[in-house]
Length: 304
Image 1 (cartoon, rainbow, N blue to C red):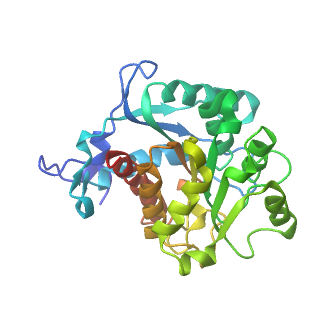
Image 2: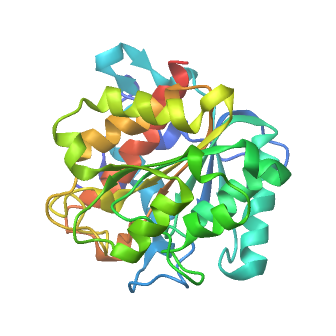
């Protein structure tokens, strides 16, 4: 059933109706700011990730605002759609993204960037941290280290470290076998990054891993940014992620992590990256997962 043909029920409000578009994005205030960042030009893999922010907004029509597990109604969360940053690629584009997220952070409790490829983690975090990057922490949920040379969706973490983010306060969850190289694994160790490989999620509870990551990234109360790279998931559930592979984490694990991190007041911003809406399965499962992560983030914020 297409989103446009879904029946209207006044007792079943849709998440797409909850996400408000303001009259003036420059002055809007609220709890959760959603910012589309359709970057794709430097992606290592061919991607149509620039189409994803719009697709996620559409997919929200499939979901309600009620989280039964917590008896939680998200209608009380003021979620504002600030639209897309125009031309987010390249130095000028990154500057526009940084300026947009800095402005949003001054008026909202939490900022959520919707990619776009993983290059946006760099510009989003630079905008949030400003000149205080050395005082922040970072958690990535990603199959990859993203420590490559150059400027691409494979290099944002290296670029942040070189800009002053301390590796001792970076945690990478879900790093996969056969998805990285020995050179970049060595680089992660040299930077002092804490790596929690995919295998540990098979033996440790998600809640324990999230708490461990927050303890390291947010040590001493430092603010934290969280990068949710959807290609960390098993390819069966995210066929619209170019670099996803069989054996990744489950959709449920990623959703749990999103809610757990958003629940912590040290987390000031998150992103959702590496979903290519143009390469998704016919049932739209990858984009639907991204839309559900938006709701999980809102649920975490509501539970603070």
